[in-house]
Structures are given as C-alpha cells and as structure tokens.
Image (cartoon, rainbow, N blue to C red; front, side, top):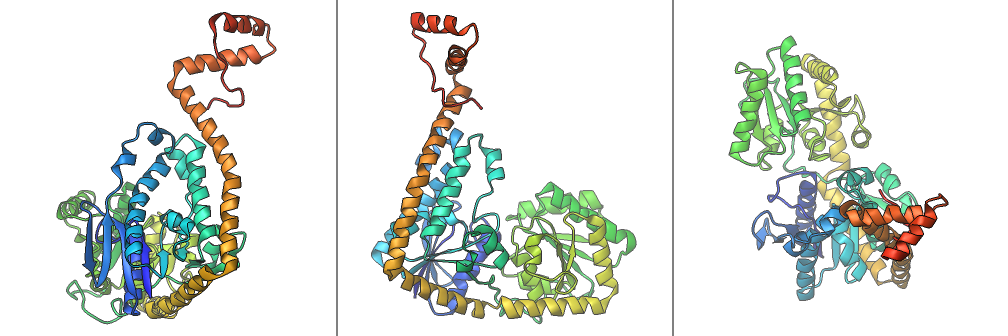
Length: 478
C-alpha cells in the first residue's frame, strides 16, 4: 500500500517532540509492515527531498509571501501561521500525488494538515485525534488574538477536516468522546505504537552500572516552572538520601551549547557537589539511557507525552507521572505507575524515596507497566489495526454514500460560513475602531445621533452640514 503522511514536524528537524515522535513511529511501523511510505514535513533551514530510514521525506519551508502580509497578522495570526506552513506542505503533496497517486493519506497530528486533501476528495484521508492539538483550544488562541474570527476559523476548518475524512482514529475512547461528541462510536481506537524491538527490558546501558538506584528525570529544562520543579525534587531527595544519582533528560535542547548552559544552570541551583548530569534525549540512545535507571520521573508538561511514559514502561522501569486525566487514560495509579499531582514536589519526593526503599514495589510497578505496553502498544499489533482502517477508508472513499456525505459536509460548511462572514464584518469594524481615531469619532458620533438624548438632533444637523457618514450601527466596539 502506498501511504502518504503529512505532519508539520518530523525528526530530526525541530527535534523529537510528541508530534514528531508520533509521526516517526507511524512511518517506521508502516515501513516495517511492508508499505511504501512518503512523508511531507516542514524544513528547519533548507528544502529537500531525501531518503531517510528507507522512506522518502519531503521537507518544505513556510510560504513567506503570506508571512509578509500587513493586516492579516493583526486580525487572524493563528490562521495565517497555520495556512502559510500548510500551503507549502499541500503543494509538495499535490506534486507527488500527481506523479504517483497515494492509496491513502494519514494525518497523525494537526487536523489542519489534512484540510485541502480532504476537501479536494482526491485521496482517502484518515485522521488521528490528538489531545490539545486536534481541535485548537479557544482560550489559548484568544490570548494571541483579540478577534474571535481567528479561533472560529481554526475550529471551523478543523471540524470540516473531521467531517470530510474517510476514517477517524483515536488513542483512547475518552479522547474520542471529547472531540467527536456527536458520534464517538464512529471513531476507531488505535493505541500509540511503541517499537518493542528497541525499548526492551534487557540490552545495553548508556551509563556505567555503578549503582542500581539511578533516577532519570524527563522534562523541559527551558521551562522555568519545570526546571525549578526538577531541582526542588532533587534537593528534596538529597536532603533525605544522598545515595541516589540523578540524570536529567532534557527534551527541549538540541545543541552542545544548550546542553552546557542547562548543566551550568542546574549547578547554580543545586551546587557543585551534586552529581546531576543533564543531557539531551538522544533518540538513538534513549533505550540505553532508560535502561540505566531503576525509575523514571516524567515532569509536568513533557513534550513527548505519551511516549515519555510508555517508553520507560516498555523497558520495565517504574514510572512516576502526573495524575491528570490524560495520564490516567494510559495507566492505572499505583498499578502500572506511581501518579502524583502536577508540580507537587513533596509527593514526588515521597514517591521517589518509596520506590528507592521498596524494591518489591519497584519491580511490581515496572512489570505491570511493561505488560500494559506489550498488550496494548506493541507496534506490530497497532499497525495491523491501522491497516484495517486504511482498507476501510479506501472502500468508503469509493462508495456512493461517502460521496453524498462529502457533499453534505461542504453544504453544512457553506451554511456555517454565513456566521463567519458576520464575524469577519465585526473583526474589520473592531480593527478600524482600534487603529483609526477618525473611525472612533464617527462611531461615537453615530451613537449620539441615533440615541434619544437631547443632543441627537444637534448631532444629526452637524452630520448634514459637514457630511459625517454614519458607521454601521450593527457593529460594536471591543
């Protein structure tokens, strides 16, 4: 089967965050299953078409023509950011599809990645739901833009992609119910795949086996809150036990200079006497690094969730993670992992010391977590489920019922676009109100002229004499 994958992030460009890791594991799993895979991703510096791990990878740069616009960045910055990057991805995909058609297209991360291919109907599109990225959070978008149209467009186009896709799959039932509340049963459940040939219980270790009590902390060292949390946990543990060596796997550093700076920053907070090592989360060395530990603490806000939980669990290492709903969908508290409240230093320290002192508990949690990964996240089994979804998507794509459903989805979008036009009108009005003193004067002048106050006749007379035009009374200022 010839499979295309559109993912804005694909390693090594931009690092190994959750989206990049997910796209990579998907691509490698499909390739291992014997499929021809082609990936379309953004480039960090230079556009290229290369063969990576036996797969053709197209890397494209963001369309600078859209980025250089003057007014749109002020009104719809999120839409502009997404569209300028995705349009480049779509052009690369269309070119490759014209040369050799794809049988199916997978969108494993952001729903927007599949907007144009799904609307065009040129290829069966399969989308994966992802927490916090499948459907954009309106509150976070509102913080970046003062205009509601920005968030409305993003959510409308995300909904349109969902409605036009042939098949939808999700890592959990809870996520499917949250993001597709109208019909969660139509969403197939496919777990996040883990390469069980790499992440194994036995194998090489990256650090000398001078102690069986190493603690690996995984997180973002550039995030001030996470950085402080890590150091506070280390200080809390050291206050009660000095025998535990620490290794911080930094998810958000990509260069030697960044690594050195992070190491010095930790020394500044903990002191020279603390044997804390900070290193990058090298993808190739990651299994060896995780096997060097007896337990792994995943800091809040990890960029590689859920892989930052599942990979050490696959290596049979006891995991300490956050007790948020997203985490509990993957593991049972006290059984497959030890869960603590986010940023709760005291609870985290107690969890570390409990695992340190209780070897039986450490083994129990490690074995149980490893069993969960083997039963639910083995890449070979996951790819088998995904292949069935691809075949169903291809069959759906050819059916008359789906052709009618695509037409209805477009009709529904046209109906809802009337509300978007109203939002666009209000957005322009608000922009003029903010940027133009003359427009603000006309706005308030119109309000007085249309009111029942004693000054209304005077305002109307002045308007006739000086030719002051009324603003659109249906709009309102911010």
